[in-house]
Image 1 (tube, chains in turn red, orange):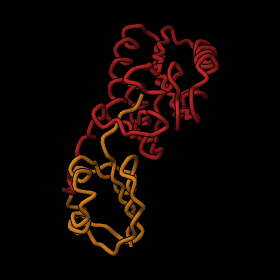
Image 2 (spheres, rainbow over the protein chains, first blue to last red):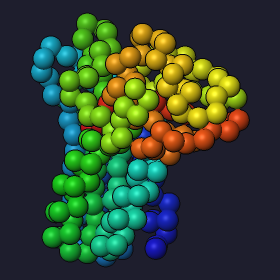
Image 3 (cartoon, chains in turn blue, orange):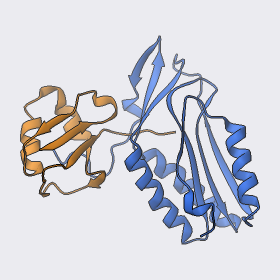
Image 4 (cartoon, helix red, strand yellow):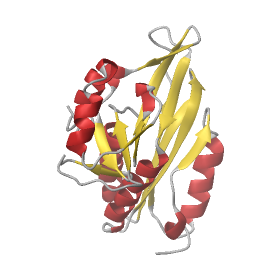
Length: 153
Length: 73
């Protein structure tokens, strides 16, 4: 591993993400270590359903272990994964989520970004709330049970 | 003693319980009607490791976390 890979962790920010700073920094860092394909996915909060924005809770210990497992998986394909996510409130049209894959080859990057983003939605320990009229309402209908849920019932 | 924490939208203060396994925890939490739905849809982590099997022995100092359905991004 090189100096960047050994220290990669999820980047968490309060409120909306500074998208240009993050994506430019990733690009400047990783282009210099010979990754030929860098794909970023930027998740923007949409104005829909009468919301003023979204809000997020994150449980960091398990997010970190989820991310480390993904880094190991990417490494097997000579790739790396990157992630940035918001905590707290993110208003409409701001960005709450950035994921990236850097790989020597495009095919690996294209396939991994799909799987990485989908697995993040399904398994990363993050809880989403709609902000409506100043209230924080859990987005239960859009949430997914983590594998193994229900063992205490 | 074992600490029980309820993450995200469950919105319940942590508990500290004298329990030996997850079956005991399950019986105690089932007595709280506010938790009924959460018990059905929440995953469980012991010391920050997600588990799929309730047959786990707990020791004093352990932390059990309940993780309700997630939606990042």
